[in-house]
Length: 342
Ligand code: MG
Image (cartoon, rainbow, N blue to C red; front, side, top):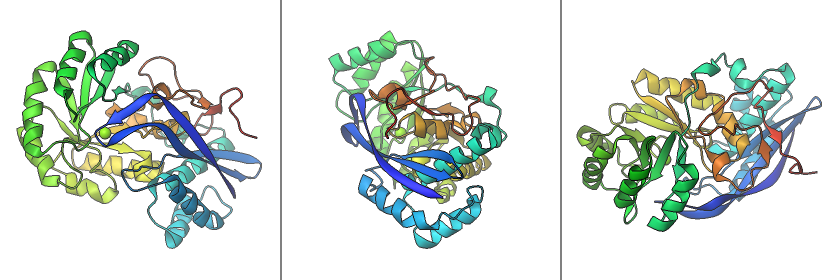
């Protein structure tokens, strides 16, 4: 197998502000695996929060490239070889693993969700994320997404609860909130009690990543179900979160691939937790890899193709909130006209 890397620079339509910081340009990495006349595509969206950079992604992929071997179907053997030279690096590993799935699906002529035996009619609707903004900006952003069935609002900044009240006054659909670790446990309980009358479906990551007892404290007092996102990184986190949260938000860039994400979904189910599948700022390529497991989820936050100004890939559904799994082989992603690099 031959592996090639390219920088995939994309921009969000608006500066995207959450409790961790603000960004508008994202240096993702495109991975192309060629074998037997076919090409599989993957994408890495390195997470600054988890200490990843584009340079680290490139370095990890170059380290792994000589160990890919010549059988794209041999996922377990490939995993073992890659782990023997370098572990971790979730985003880089996810890109590689999704390119292998794309290749295998194309080789067999079937979409990955079908290869996994899933029922696409069970795919839930996806929410649309509303980043932090001052009141005027928030009103303008809300105008663009009023007809989405579900919105996730980023909280954890000044004026956030007032903003949420303004949103609820205009928006009739389902509302979720995400504090991205911004609150202390007692602040979280106060905030959640204050927003309960607005009809909030769930709250994501109210307290810092490592504060597992804080999550439990909030869950025991919150009138709104509590989900872990930043605290749910590895398979081994699931057992630690059991009994402390109502659900988890999994992202392919955290888990390192489709197969590990599926293991985490089943582990969470075994502990009675609900499952959301989310994303970093990714193009339709990374999103469609996560979407292949969407029929296993209770909630989806796969909205990147709506947030981006320059998604080079096509095939994502245009119906708002709908993640439609296609019959196209592999990950079902095509280059948009004129976007394909030489
Ligand atoms: Mg989150």
